[in-house]
Image 1 (tube, protein in one colour):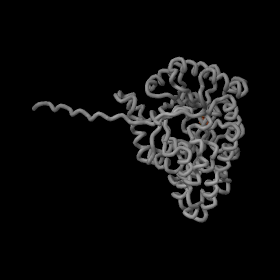
Image 2: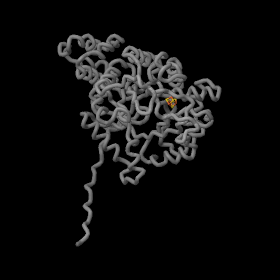
Image 3: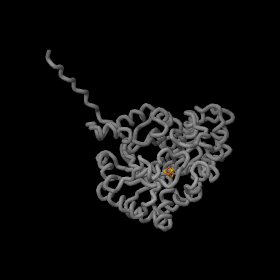
Image 4: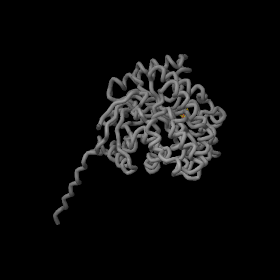
Length: 404
Ligand code: SF4
């Protein structure tokens, strides 16, 4: 089978993934004594607690934690690793908030503030339109852009590029539109869906703990509001992702409680398709007290996400944030999905590369294969899948030497 389809809820998981776990976890005596009770729970499909998560965080052998996470990842998806062809177009960096961890936002009067008007946005997207099927658009909270602006943007995008799915606006952007336009979340989301919005990215979750949020992103949506907005989207048939920004000031317990809140919501709605854990990057931010995450902590957090989040199908290695090398390793530590293709290649493409369709997919598939996995291209909402077979690369023609 080289291509297949799935439902939003399954998102490509093997339907019998829980039944496959005992064989994959294997003989419990092969696990170290402190990890054995957790391995036993995993083998029996028993949900892990926050205390289990703490054991996993404190376990001295990272490789063993990764091995356990890999059992669950293989139970769900075998050795497949998923990616899609996407482009990120950030519509504006003007923002009425000033989250301490954010290096992106600008005030309206800043020299490098920008706001893409509709034509500029479409022109930007047009440069990639032939080789992407998803546009990922998030940005600042523009003080003057209400829901009509985004309705016009999405419907123009859909009309001009009907093959490109629109994944756009984080929960705080939905909250901002709701406030500016004085409409409930459900009406905002429904109108945007009618205009062409296909799914929501998960950004803005940071850590779902209001004491942490008061320090790192004061004024943003509360934990409850983040969950409420995603729940409303799910109820309206809009699938979403969810994220976790770690390595700022949060405790391990707060990370684990964050995961618990997300999995409990997904027990009810089944609308989260993917969890994206990524570490805080400190350049040009205002959080000197941040603890920052090491490489092994990033891998460990990805592995623990896989083990804790039994109701969320995909765990993403976000290579734009953690880099290609860690993203590749993460595919052996519980991650099954890797984002994305175009962003890094846009410079070459804009500079006139003649390999517009496949260069980046080839590079990504090589990374996936080196991690021992099979590259599978997916659509934006994890319902269509196709094994990616890289085309053969033509050998370079030798340049003719000038005769002497
Ligand atoms: S709301 Fe978003 S863009 Fe605005 S400051 Fe916070 S993280 Fe940055």
